[in-house]
Image (tube, rainbow, N blue to C red; front, side, top):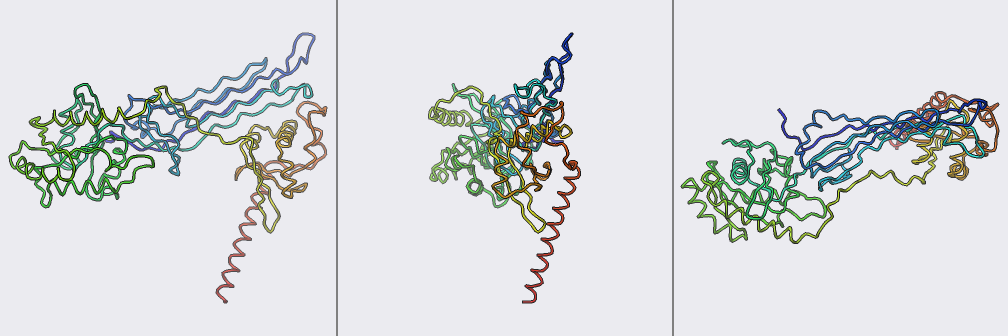
Length: 497
């Protein structure tokens, strides 16, 4: 049964924004008293919060799919829709949030850090908010945009002051149990510890945390055993304590060879940029199990050799509680010195928001081929405006054309060579396809027409969205077939040569 999880993929879906409302106020003796449609509510965000009381990602391992609430629709009488209920997910301090490609989004090392992992959708404006002196009674409202939907990877790196490293069954879990109130599972077979154990130690006036890093054997940094999964928990530690088994019965093993193997694995493990390499951090050596007479003799024999390498050596017994006081006070002095050297930092919780990019920017890409050019408009604003447009309402389509013209999309299409009737796509593969008509850029606000209509669209032969999308996919298939045919001809020519 899984009891500890330090890496999990979350499938997140933020709340969708509510649609705006189209409504006209009606009063006695004033049947058309002006627009009063309210705005839609914003969708709920999904926020990750670093919580010191949470120690594992187990709950997300069993329930990786999380969703926030949708925003409510706007209503008449200028009533706005309710905002969608946000979702806060508590994660352990030390959690690193990455995207599926492995790029780090935020490192939540401080308690209380808040990261907006999935921003909610924006609520649509009602016709009351869209009214202006030139457009007194809009017959349309904006739709709500969908919230962010995708995956994020949570990777837990234990935040501890000291890491205990060593071979399996060297006595690391026993040492934590002896110097703290932690009660890890202890047994006399290798790999008893399958996940890091944390313990809080009080030594004089200094309190520090100790982590047991399991599974370090030769080849751990290359994925052998459990080492690669848990070496990440050493990254944040200030000091290292090498726990060496002086009573091992395995042939070919002794404290010196064990130390050489562990040092080699720590040196081979790459730490993130900006962090001190593992072997450059303060290190102590604990020769364990000296309650066994043969182990005590071996500890006396190898102590001088280890001290010649520059290590401070402590002979301990977790069973008889020998040497533990000296070891903990030595660790406390290292931790205190490190803490005094650190600059003062603000303790206020940090709020990290996923950047949305520069909204004012857009690009027009020309995708050419044998069957004519296709012009693709990419950018946060144009794509969001398309999501907000009700294409069943001619007035809303005219309003979209006005917005694109003011942004400069029309001028850019002219510059790259688009002509009336050219196929234009706003967005990616699932974008909206339409036939570009430059005449639509004239100001709709100066025109008078029944609500929900736009005179610029009268008398035109217009295809439905489904028809445009069908032609778009036919065009893409034709281009793919054309490329395949050219590749076959090129391959045949190379074979003839």
